[in-house]
Length: 304
View 1 (spheres, rainbow, N blue to C red):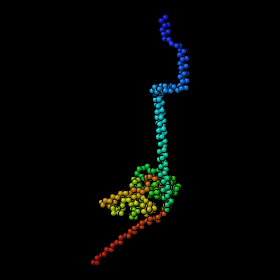
View 2 (view 1 turned 90 degrees about the vertical axis):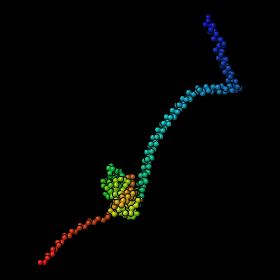
View 3 (view 1 turned 30 degrees about the vertical axis):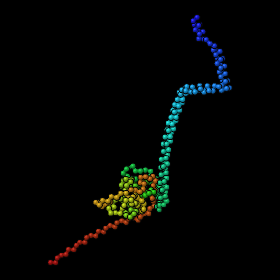
View 4 (view 1 turned 60 degrees about the horizontal axis):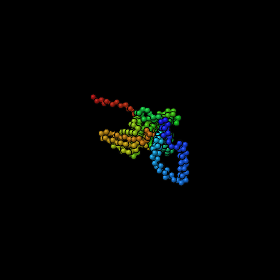
């Protein structure tokens, strides 16, 4: 009995079917009025203003998720592109260095070709294939040997001056002793005054020594030394070195003169081998000194 009365209390008012029909008709009426007379435009605007903060709050999680996804995607793309650009930069740097090396080699070859065309002596181009491993020896090995008619004693030079001399010939290689070798000497003369002397190697690729020059010799800093051509090995007039430092001490009979090679002794890859130099007549042998026996002295006897 009490249960029935409480059920009736909570079910007061129209039935659900009546409510459905009523609200459906009300919705259709509002749609008709809004579409026909535009009476609810201001009401809709007011409701949209009131609901805007709620809409923004509801859309915040989705917006944050999309932004985080876009940020992570952008970061991964940037990292990948950065790695690709670094690899491309390394490859381009290697290619650029190779191109610069080829340009320098082409420039050197053009200069050697110009020297070869202007020279009055036959020359042939050779390339360095080996260098002496002994740090106390200044020697190189060229890719021209006996098959190219290379002979010991021929001069090797670049576009600036004398580099060295062929000292040994193999079938397909030839050994070059640089002018900076400590056991090598080149007859030279001062281009300014014509003073003749001999320049010696010091074992250092950047230094030569002009020895046995008197303190009073007319040699100045900056003078150019060229081959004198008096030995028949080096043709005259080839640049050899420049005078760098002069030390004159009256306590010593000779001045200490340091020179710098003009040629790229330790720089170039291609060199020129001079051939066909005119041969000088053989040096005459020294005549043996004639030994005359001492005549016996006559002893004068005293008369008795």
